[in-house]
Image (cartoon, rainbow, N blue to C red; front, side, top):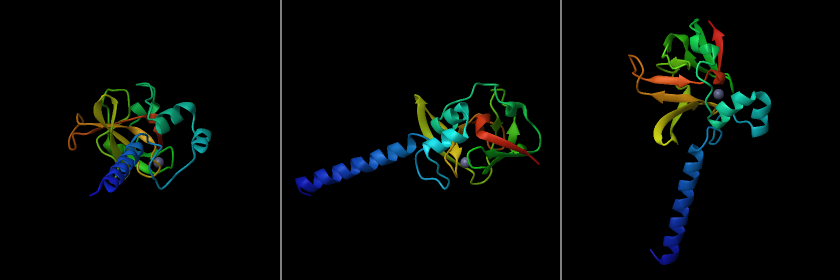
Length: 159
Ligand SMILES: [Zn+2]
């Protein structure tokens, strides 16, 4: 490899890494089946919904009425209405956020974020990329997972 092609490959490699890094940086980036402009998201969401769903914010603990909702039904994405979680997998984690031990098949995507320095598993709607919450390993059987979600990202539809 001569010097010029070495530099070219380094530049290409750097670009590829930058693309991968930016895809993971924010729930709003990346390619999803349902996409909207930033202005469209702002228009359809409240300030809090926008902050949580599009900027990976977190609602105040115990602020969501869905935290203590145990009615039978399905929790859909506020951004695109995809069915994400079933009431059958919901439990009271005591954290103040709606918690589930599993999502519906193929409903969510995940990535690792380092917002609190230590790595966490972020989860978002598979179809529109809206941020839902995080997945921790201190959940109940049978999965041992705790999907800790923001209620504002969800719309509950009774069965
Ligand atoms: Zn969605």
